[in-house]
Amino acid sequence: MIEVSDEQFQELINQALEELPGEHAKNITNVAILYEDEPTPEQREKSNLTPYQTLLGLYEGVPLSQRQGMGHLFPDKITLFRRPLESQSQNLSELKEEIKHTLWHEIAHYYGLDHDRIHELE
Image (cartoon, rainbow, N blue to C red; front, top):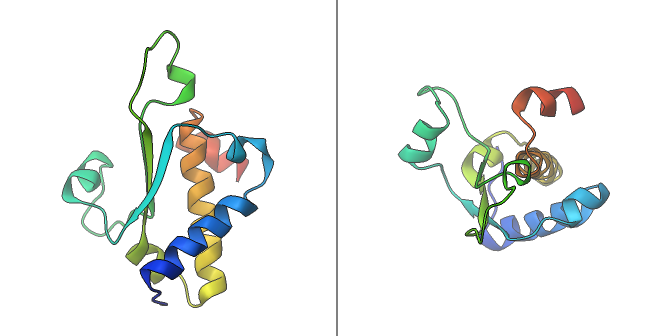
């Protein structure tokens, strides 16, 4: 496990965003990308997690594929969870890759992909 400061974690998120391939990652709009140390009990419940499961990231919002005819929406939110991501990583390079992979996964949800389709693409 590796631990980094808030500033280092934010910088790793910024780097991962810049390095994500394709126009899809660069064209997301009205999405806040945040991080928290751990998911809240409500986020864990919403994600149907058991006590022993972990959550690395979470997309909250209305996917683009479901927005037809909708008026103004609040910004969507992608939250990365620092402690679970750190616990998956042995060094800075692994942490950066975990962040990048988690961001890609959550951005795929923004575009309306479900877990089955995301795993197919991975």
